[in-house]
Amino acid sequence: MKIRFLLLVLPLCTLWPAEAAVAIANPGGRAAVSLDGKWRTIVDPYENGYYDYRLQPSKDGYFRNARPKDKSELIEYDFDASPALDVPGDWNSQREDLFFYEGTVWYKRSFDYAAKPGTRLLLYFGAANYEAIVYFNGEKLGTHIGGFTPFAFEVTGKVKAKDNFVVVKVDNKRHRDGVPTVNTDWWNYGGLTRDVTLIEVPETYVEDYFVQLQKGSANTVAGWVQLNGARASQRVTVSIPEAKASVDVTTDARGRAEFHFPAKLSLWSPENPKLYDVAIAAETDTVHDRIGFRTIETRGTDILLNGKPVFLRGVSVHEEAPFRAGRAFSVEDARILLGWAKDMGCNFVRLAHYPHNENMLREADRMGMLVWSESPVYWTIDWENPVTFANASNQAAESVARDQNRASIILWSVANETPVSAPRTAFLTRLVEQIRAADPTRLLTAAMEHHSEGATATTNPVVINDPLGAVLDVLGCNEYVGWYDGSPEKIDRTVWSSKYEKPLVMSEFGADALYGLHGEASARFTEEYQEDLFQRQTRMLARIPILRGTTPWVLMDFRSPRRSLPGIQDWFNRKGLVSVRGEKKKAFFVMQEFYRSKAAN
Ligand code: GCU
Image: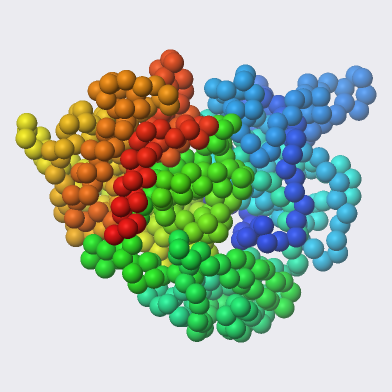
């Protein structure tokens, strides 16, 4: 027991690999060279490219991208003769023989580069699932753990004019102490799943910034700017030209400055997704970003958007690519998925169960879609393991840092369906406090579970009394009455109560249905069963006094290794309201009607 205690007091950073990692916000707003495209790959289930036969990290591993100097030299791998995979993209949906593959795949990309004087170079990854070890020209840069958040390493001074090579060991093996842990109801797509970019910045650059409305104010912009480089103390002007509003500040010796300034702004909302060009201009670097300004708060059991009560007409969405399946990543993927949600009458999406790609958030900003963003603390992770907490904490920090300027995000969710226990609640409460400290402007939530108070033939009383609810702003609750919990008629006698006078978002409810499979409403997996269940659910939901939002499970069918039923699931969770090809199931129209009536009220 003592050892564990000692570990708990060690500062987080000692538990987490930081190495030469660098931070940079808004990669899309910088000068850059894309490294997307075909990367050579070596599938390495035995990690032969990393360990020697004594399981010691080999100094001659595949990261050397070695080539035999002559016919007598023994080199037993050759990237350039190896198959290529697309980046961004997961390997499971690109190659049939890798469909179920979990393990290591080595990626290699070569490029030439004409150096620019006074320019720093950052090698940026939008995401890599799950563990990525990055090498540049044979030198190890660092390691990143977590499949859904960005990371970058500095390569200034390491880049040659010709034949540079990036080698990345990507390993998507699942770990009991991982985040997520070994079991999930989504496909463990492995690979360099988002853009890879070589970003060019000045010697001292604008590393990060936070520009939002001050908590509780609709006309004061507040935030901070962080510079990175030798010239830490500089004059920085933060301006919103269209609103004729700006402020001049001077960063301190650590390159940081806080600011606030008055601004008369058209507030962002689903009805008015107004984005402003915001400029953060330091003496050595200027970054532009498209930012919306809105306020979000709770008052009793109401959620107020720009001071007005709002009902979150939502749907849960996995980062599964429409039409082709596989890990989604592109602007087009985002537009299609959010477009289908709009067709349903949504003003809100729950992006489950991990931070989705940045294109999704920027499209949500542009299209006017409110967002619930979630950390992959899913089901039963290793609550008392400090390494697991450091991992979850790091992923939450990276997610907030990437998306803190997105108006669309109103809710940070720290977890999904986690079992109530003291270590668990302590773990999640620390995450809530961490995120609140980093971003005081948004609301905190989690997808919790309800507790039955004993169903009878006439009533099914259920209550939301998870202790975690005490530290959240908005209650999230998943329920499967009528699917995992009884049959649909049970929904009609279900009565909800809550220990907390707080707004509730019913974050999951639903049933599997194979598009085109028809039959009795009592026949599972038919569209009629799903339709009937949604008719009963929407009637029940309308009876819950504190309900302020719904995100049925789920917008589109998605792949899951837990769903093998032949001819029906075939490795897909079929709870989508649309199929992978966007075909709308009968239940889709039940939700559409429910949202039409909600929007009218
Ligand atoms: C759970 C879980 C989802 C899962 C869904 C289902 O509630 O949060 O990730 O896919 O139920 O069983 O379909």
